[in-house]
Image 1 (cartoon, rainbow, N blue to C red):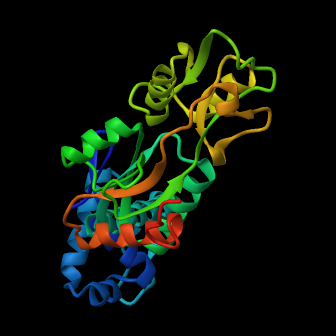
Image 2: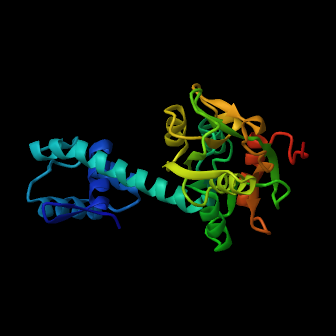
Length: 296
C-alpha cells in the first residue's frame, strides 16, 4: 500500500483513488460498480478519508442525486490526481528498471569524444532493453576492474594482437607545438596519469633510444594534455585522430623513436551473457564496422 506523508499524516492513496472514483462517476453507486465494491464500503472509505483529513469532502444527498463537493473537496481533487499519477509513474519506472538487464562497460579515458557520444547514444537507441553502466578510466584501472569481475566489457587500447572480441589499429604519433625545439637535451613531456599506455610508451621509448626526459605536465584527460601541447609545455604521444590545431608531428628525423603498434580493442569475459553479447555486438557495429582488422 502506498502512503504519502503530509504534515505528520500518512495519506492512503487507496482512499484517494476511491474519492476520485466517486467524483468522476458522479455518485457512490456508480463508483461502487466501477471499483467492484459495495456502496457501503465506498461510503465508509470516504468517511474515513474525511475523518483523517479533518474536513468534509462530499455533501451527502439523497440517492440518485449528483455528487456535490465541499470547498475542501474541490481543493483535494487536483492533488489527489497528481498523487495517484506519481504513484503510477513510480510503479512503472521501478518495474521497468527491474526488468532491464545491466551491462557494465569500461571505456578508456582518452577515447575520441565524438566516438564516445556516438556509441553511447547508439546503444541507448538500438538496445533499449539493456541499461549501460559506464566507467571511464585508464587502461590499468579498467583491466583490474575486469579481472575482478566488476566490468563486463572494456573498450581500451592495448598492444597489437592482444585478446579481443574485435579491434582496429590505433595510430599513435609524437606531437608538439610548432615552436617546440626537438633538439633539447632533456625532452619535456606532457603526459596522462599513471596507467595510460601512451605515458608508459613515451617514457620507455625515449629511455631505450638514449634520450633524457622529464615530466613537464600531467593531465587527467585528453583536453588538458592537448592544451599543454599547444601551449608548448612539452611533447606527447596522442592518437592520430585526436591531433588538434596548433600541433605538429615529430618523427625519427628529430630523434623521436618509432612507436610500438597499438589497437583499440573490445575485451570481454570468456563467457558472454545474452545482454552482454547484445551490447558487444552493437559496439562492434559502431566502433569496428569491419570486425577484427588485420595489422598493417
